[in-house]
Image (tube, rainbow, N blue to C red; front, top):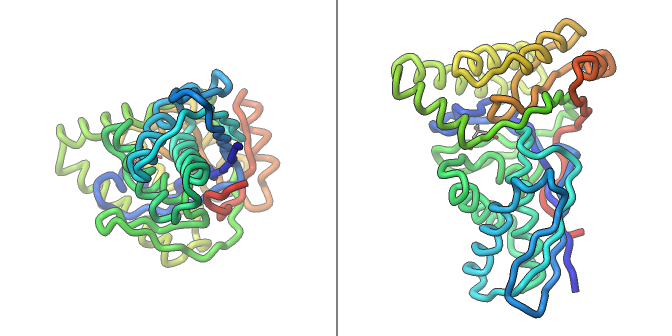
Length: 300
Ligand code: MEV
């Protein structure tokens, strides 16, 4: 018998990095998913089969199995197959999505479904196991779906109204390591605590403003947030080229999304999505049109 579960990727609209230091973030599930199929086997091995491009997900998948086995108090040999609709290590939450989908599929196979809250909690622990540090943002969005306001200091998320936001995602083609980039920001903060803490706090204020008025001056607030992410040193030449290209093509706002250091930018460009996608592709990068507010983890 086999079970397939899927979980969505995410974009962070506001608050990445600052959320690691207790400030809020707003993130939305996107209509691009990762599918994980698990099948019991006779021996006690856990074998992961996927395209070479998804190799980065292996540690997450293996840790997710360990966490589910410990949670349920039972284990099994497994063959696991992974298929993804979006690139890994691109800032779109592939690690969280593969973790969440694996937890859902393995627990369904062994015992029957477990609540989304348990899936989100276990997945967050897996990200911490693998990365050393991670906020609850990516795993919560992948588990619950929708658009979430994340309050890391309280460890809770609040669903926000779905305003049918459509974004153009531009992928630089250069993967970024969340672990490394989070560490870079930490080093900068240790060097200049007063300045960096103010930047982080300021990002938090932008996120709070955006929450009050999601949809009103979304673009302007995205641009402000991007300036502060640049100040934290997570921008790259390629990301800036896409961001400035998107703005010049009529986007109301554009910013890095996720950890940065490569990966993706998002552009809010109502009515100008085609023009922005074209400029992204002209730069040799991948453009994806995504809708925010997709369904969270589910058994297929
Ligand atoms: C990564 O998608 C977002 C970061 O804020 C890290 C985290 O929240 O764990 C950079």
